[in-house]
Length: 446
Image 1 (cartoon, rainbow, N blue to C red):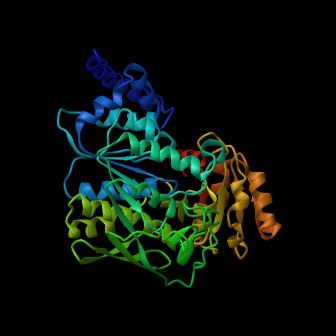
Image 2 (cartoon, one colour):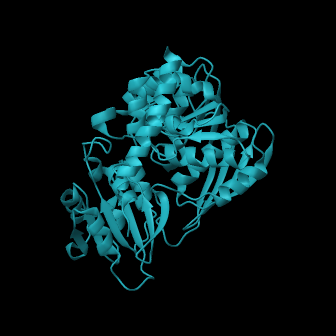
Image 3 (cartoon, rainbow, N blue to C red):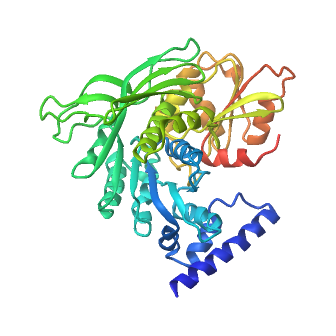
């Protein structure tokens, strides 16, 4: 009976999605999945039968970019891949992906599934994974996740449910490294990071989470790249950054990065050009490259795929709006926002669109922990928009930005149009939206 309900859910999903597109009511990233789960609560369990190898990716920041890069690499190797490309990473969004993606009896070679940290354990109740990539753990949406220890417990609970899981962990994050105890794990991280840019600020002002070693004593850093990411050790108990399976050597330029990855098991190194901005995106690329090497993708295929990868859906996405080159970068928590702000072109018109819907997090105190002081030298307008446009304007005032440069326009479309009204197409635009503001922006035509 369960299998019958599964096929009924698949048919219903197609009908519902067709109606949504016909009525132009929604992007359809979750509603179809919600219906599929309602018809067949075990929908994801049956969906797993359509996948040979399942790779899940979680963490506070970088899930969408890392999973997008990995899916792109696997597809470049002519593998059949299913992937929640738009970043809908709760159960309904993942179910949505399968409901619309399964269209034959042929199995997918890989599922690359980004999962919300709090929903990973629920996902594993239905969907067993072969691999789990953990990118980082930063403070995010305190109203949903609470403190970092709570988020870590969500992920650990999920790992404990999946006995055959192989982990790929960011060794530069001491919280993430903890997941590798008593579990088969690979580790990736950076040995050297060099900034080669006269445009962007190379100093990291990302807030460092205050926590101690598992023994209760402070950690000491030999190198600290941003937030708690770096080379750490405990002088008291000897806990330290683990030996790496994949070592990264990075040069960060204004608009791209050059990355050398050493596969320590093979004692071979490979060079990559990453057409994404910032150190934080280089971490995502290193995660994707490391997982691709683990799964046996040829290095030449990875190199080609990384070079021609284009960011989508607000993760360094580039668009042309009313003739102006526009860069869209999602912001959602203090660490991620601070690293993004470090890369903003201060000669561009800047739009900051802040919503406080459930998917964004109701608590906007993170605005005060983010380093908006990086915008003090902005040469043109800084337009605040979204539900909390006025709160954002106040934050910018306290960041030292001249009130003459701050414009409040709560309507996001009007805010972007105002930023793009100049006839000088050489003027660039930077848009920094929260998640639901990004969803709105993605549906707008300019």
